[in-house]
Image 1 (spheres, rainbow, N blue to C red):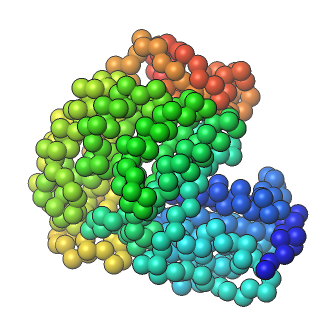
Image 2 (image 1 turned 180 degrees about the vertical axis):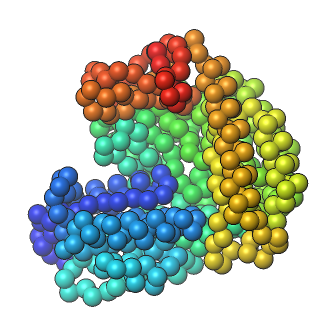
Length: 432
């Protein structure tokens, strides 16, 4: 039994790399440690404990994790540094050898930090094999953010050929609708106006509780303390017509979709082991536009997968040009140890990957400008985010249009009806 009094007056700093899911989990770790006497260090204070929640989605992400750990240890040289997250789970030995790392915690040990902070505990690495990761701990981030991120699901059963997430986070599992609704209600009562539902594969919700994702969003739609909800990235084959029809008439769910395509070539989709083809994807996007013409549709695309010939890339580009989306999130394929994609030939050169990425980013910029222009003249509700006095403040409409305004304290963390007039000087947002 650990004496919690030994942690009183200790100070901790938290660093998160990667996805919204990591931010939600870091927030829960911070809350848990605060409840046990470990307060968040103020700016300029030297921390006793540093917690780095890592990412490993690409080789670049691994590199950023190593750099961040070294930088953080220099900033807090006398601290006890804990590395957790996907990079720590996938490569615990490599993580432990980074100068400054005192403890490596795996995905299943994130919320057991206090047990490892005991001075008598000399463990250096505590990482369960991925096959043994079965627990699910729901979390909801808050802190300084206007939007909250509610973790509803974790893990993935899909095993796409290029991806290591199932090896880092384990099989699909989730919380219950009852406990997630309760967390959302509490976030709303403490000032949270908007909640983003996060997970690794959220449309797969229900594997461990016998419930469904449509049942979850119907239950959350009744939470009166929260103004609006967004759904983070969801697989196209799990975004059902029933779900779209419900969102189109719901009280609180926004017309904002983030859907991974990954490739506009059916042959490359097969190499990726995706669960749909381009015809299905196109029908899904057109269904959204039919039901919610004003909706924001973001699409993920990977360029340069092994086996993506010039012809296959051109198929992707031509396919994307036909789709009525709002913005692309373009990722350059990164080889990940242990994935099936490493067996595919031929290899795409770094220069060709860069050129393909440039072309799709240019297409994305044109699509986004077209979408923003189509919204000028409409009145939308904007949730303005926290900003410093004297600066510009920003917020997002329900359909995810970025809006710029002069600082006004009375608008912060409030939903304000505005009429969209034109682009700002940088063409990065609309003004009213």
